[in-house]
Image 1 (cartoon, rainbow, N blue to C red):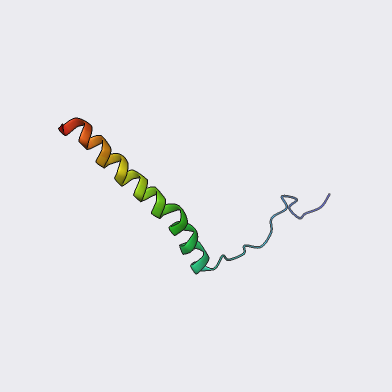
Image 2: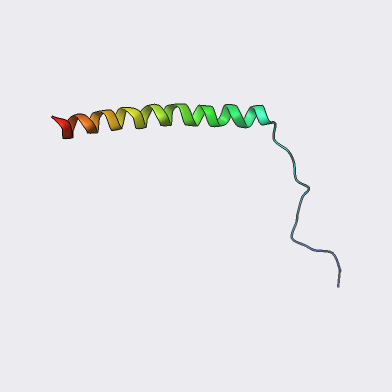
Length: 48
């Protein structure tokens, strides 16, 4: 029997902050644009 854990844990690696920010921007900007257009179109349906 071995006293070490066999879960295969690896040391944590860090992701560059700039890369995370760019990735969020690539997802967030089109998402916000789409939501804005959806709300604008839906409000036109209900306000006449």
